[in-house]
Length: 300
Ligand SMILES: Cc1cc2nc3c(=O)[nH]c(=O)nc-3n(C[C@H](O)[C@H](O)[C@H](O)COP(=O)(O)O)c2cc1C
Image (cartoon, rainbow, N blue to C red; front, side, top):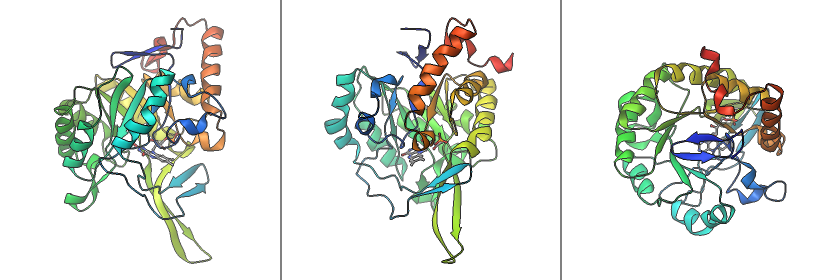
């Protein structure tokens, strides 16, 4: 492993760059452009116990400095992913983080149970932005006791490390991160999208409401990473508006062990390979022996 290698939850990744869940399909779609094994790890589209069709169109909207999506968690279901798509990652020998969700606590647990232990599976990433249909649709991730309970329920279900992916739509993200940690989370992904909407002034309606992503999220995500790094002693994966190597470095310096790139891939599908190559050059130019040496240095 070279100077970009990082340790994450007992595995060594060849670099700290991953796609953000839901922004790189099932991995094979990018193959005509670049090889998926360029990444340190692949993060799956959010998977659920049963398949989901997702929302009607329009599902994405370009905003100034960002994008709103309302995909509605469309996915093929956890079993189909493992029978049809996972063998591709085994062939590529690429570590995988399995993003998953449910609309009840039981659905999270059923889904987690179906995820097999495998050398290439680094962790399960729990999408906690999901609405809890038993609590009037309020997302699990907005309430510290709910986060604690659901993380604990999943942790007790699986021997695979569990990463809690948090929503920024909270008063105090450190408090939510602590609830996840105390519930047994082995890592954190910070952050998911922010609720947002657009209005079509000609049609006088709201054609789309969903999650806001992209550059507009970056300062919010950076602050979440910075604050949680100081307080919570588990590895952090940073996500939110990372568009280039400067953004990636900022997240690593704020305390992220690894980073995820989402919306930037819609702007330039080569963003991730470009960031990896630029990080390598940055290490050489700065006479830095390894990328993990810069994790959290903005705190010193
Ligand atoms: C089209 C789209 C689909 C997404 N699907 C998921 C998902 O299935 N599960 C999840 O946890 N996050 C999902 N996200 C959120 C991203 O993984 C990421 O946390 C967020 O977009 C912030 O990163 P970015 O600004 O680099 O896009 C999705 C985002 C987009 C834009």
